Amino acid sequence: MPSEQDLREMFAANDGPRNSIDPDRVISRSRGRRRPLQIAAGAVSTLAVVGIVAVAVQTSQFTSPATMTSQEASDSGSTAEQAPLTETFESTLKRAPADRLNLCTGTLTEVAPSFYGLQLDVAFAAQAPAGTDPVSGTVRLTNTSGTRVTGSTGATPAITLSQDGVVLWHSNGPTIMSLAIVDLEPGASMEYQASFTPVRCEVEDDLGSSFRDGLPAVPAGVYDLSAAIDFTADASMAQPDIPEIDLVSGPLSQVTIG
Image 1 (cartoon, rainbow, N blue to C red):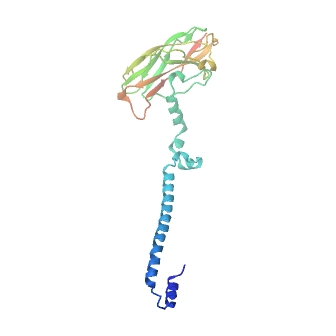
Image 2 (image 1 turned 180 degrees about the vertical axis):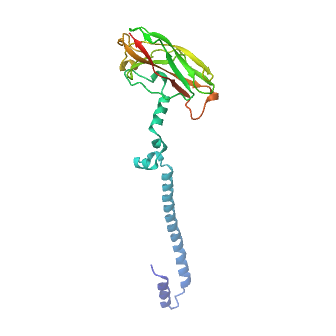
């Protein structure tokens, strides 16, 4: 494309009578035709840049923190990873339901103290006959805290028979669908009727709704009994940092079978 200086020299060379063209006017029109093209080109470039920025913004907005790599998660030092193992383990146990706390042939579970200061004590006779008949007794729920505790539990606690830390039998089968009202002042207690069967169950027995018939009786010897129950506090006692259902248990109680 001729430059502005080239056009001026070309028009200056044609000095005859037919040269009625105004060079300044031609140059001005030439500039006018080029300006829209230049503006359009600039607009296209601007749109392209805006499009790139928009894509980048959308990408950053929809990138979820859950897609962090394991190295990034490690570098971030999340609270869950920094929590003590014992605290997490105890919190999990507190959420375990009483009737699934100990399973056949499994290791006897150690339960953290009740959030509300409740404790279960097994009150069976120290001697029980060998065989496959149920043995009846009582379980005592005591408020060991310094404040009144109100709420409800199931009708009866879950009983576990164990030896050397291994579960031999536990409460199973249909349960009574009713509630026991708990209203205990400091130091006060209430009792539940309970029973256990001195037989040995297996892993397959926990797969059904109740244990198989004809389970073998445990041999004569010294065994441990323990109890657990789920406690639901009244709404007036609820606290944000305490689970809705409190798992209550207590110390082991020895029983001699034979």
